Length: 158
Length: 241
Image (cartoon, rainbow over all chains, first blue to last red; front, side, top):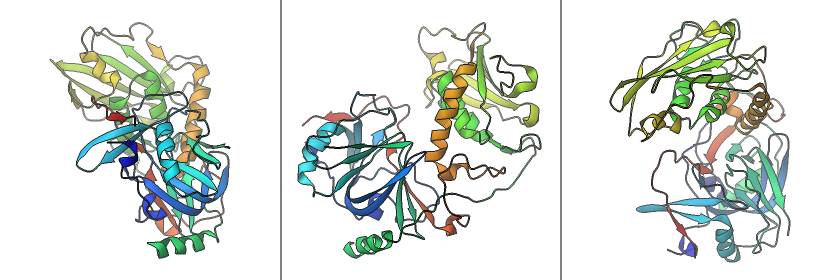
């Protein structure tokens, strides 16, 4: 299988972030991935948060036992009927970003357990927001706000 | 599908903050209950999670981190690990109130004793002390081949020799600051996880307006963007192209 053959498909943002259920807390076993175009997302860190408007949202996963890699994160994809595969985030973005729609920003919904400091991906022409530590998704359905909560967030600018 | 996205986008334009307060909890103070609450600390410890933490920990520092993420109070729980013989290990959790880096009897919160029961088998039991006096876990059996952290599984490794003889390992007072910082981040990133506290502490939860408690208050949990893979021996194939 090639990286671009992964079933990385567009999904409605609520389904992509597993927010279409009625859970009081995030599902820690959620393994869904894909991309979506989100009008507005709140990226919440421990001490501050920020709105990201008009974002290309990429939902990805890394395994808790993934190796620490300087400047990169090892992604893992569960596949139907076959063993999971891994891909380095840098390689994934290099192959996939040219295939996805351009928005004003890119948000990575992706845990970063080793707190890797990333570089701006050459294939991205807009700011890329990524997190340190665990990332979980929340929906404030009183106000229709989507939260991605992490220890902290960082923005890479082209 | 498109209409759902559009509806959400419209709703998002209204967005105003709401994070925070949570559901209350019931209080049980019998020593043998899974949850123990005391007048002294008014902070509960989920013993099931403590027991699981020991089972899953990869070493003393990992165990410290796990225990302090479980504990809902403000204090830092230090731990001491001592190997009494080749396979018997005692872990002590304690509040290092005098910051001398050693376990003083009044500071003890719990001990976990692990001892062998046969070839490739062992058991462990947790006992509460001080404010948590009276808690005794059942004896929990473990065996080689089970999904265990390195702290336990090491004892069945070829060439194993106990690492924590003598003074053993004890959380240093200087490390307590790092644990506190790490825990604050963990609590901020997991706001609903710490809503059980009876003390009403906010634990650095992001500030917000008031929100009704419970699910009806309007927060839905989604997913976590990591995969729990502890203990596996085969790693996935990495795609390079």
